[in-house]
Length: 103
Image 1 (spheres, rainbow, N blue to C red):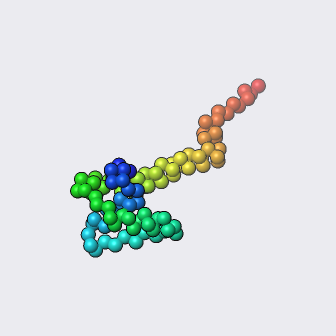
Image 2: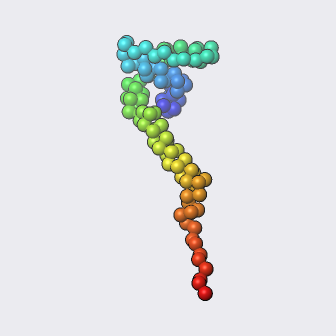
Image 3: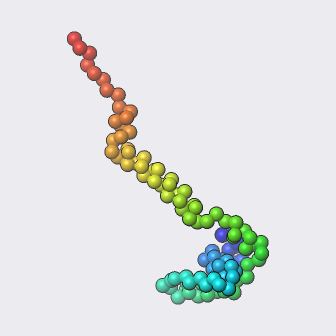
């Protein structure tokens, strides 16, 4: 996305909107924003013409949801590990107990 945006001299948001607009006349992206500058940026995406090569590269990108799922799984495993450490599980598991010898 960043590479195509740099080539097109546009923002990634503009490239995303231009890609959506290139999908057909039955697609109407409706981006939301609170800032006038973002409305102007989004409107400029209508003038952006992506080449066939750029469209193909964008079509072949890994969906963000797939990346987000991997990140969530990674963060979850880290959180599970941290939780285990906080609960003393790791210490209890590695602690050695010395019992006094009976006399």
